[in-house]
Image (cartoon, rainbow, N blue to C red; front, side, top):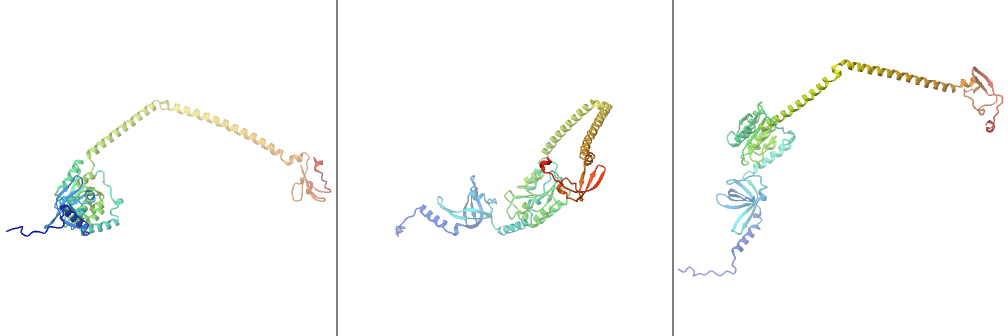
Length: 416
């Protein structure tokens, strides 16, 4: 049988592999639907490059697609991810010509199937924020040295061990009181609330840690429930939230008085380093001792100075000196007062002499007469007199009535 008996017609144009790939790339990247779409699947073959880029494969039970997440977009994604995570990604489909492969260039990545949880999370967050539960003014300060530390978490796992190890390393004999509670799944929120309330009633506890390890949004959801948030807000003792990893943020973190990035950091927040405190106290005691010694030395010097004072050795000397001083001041006061009186008498005599010289009676005794008209005014000019006008003439020893017969005025030149 001749396999080449039927010949294929020679094509008018032959495409290179590059031409074909570029054509497919143009078709894919210019398609509006493929320029921005959500795809969900399981992560596998994850590679995190030193440059910050991430490469992985999204797969389901029937197909796979390669994905690339550039470093710039990776920094905007709050969630960590790993192989086996079921996620949904948003991006644009692209063709990579060197390998003839298509891939999705990712710009956003979220855990899949949690849209409703995100919506509930945002709704509760806005509600509590409006009520002021996130305000810094209502948050309590952590005690410097608590009498005891209460911990609400699962008794199993690395979280409780991390907290205990850090606290014991920093403050060896610090009492720690664990209230076991579910931190995931049904009933977890109620147990966490009960643990917070129980530790609030325990007089041995001054600060409370609510902790859990990392996980997905579903795993951490009990810390986003309103009951837990209100229990933390109502706590009379400061609450430190240490839920998830540093990139995880729950409602409990926002309401708590302090947020710790990890459970280990929570242990560092609630207790100081005892050895450092002892060293500080030792330095302060040394300063206090030096200060007291300095004060005692100054007191001794003052005592020695006082002991050598002649007045303290013989107090009668001070009394005698004070008596001499009082007598001297008394004599000076008496002398000064006498001088004051003498000067006052002299000023009085001068004033009396001047007043006597201005007394009209003195002039009348020397032969002068003062005329007073009917209205009691002193007549000091002929211009105020009229013939037949009655006046009173005042003498040194009495008065006499008179009538003006004739008024004779002299000129100013004649008067001069």
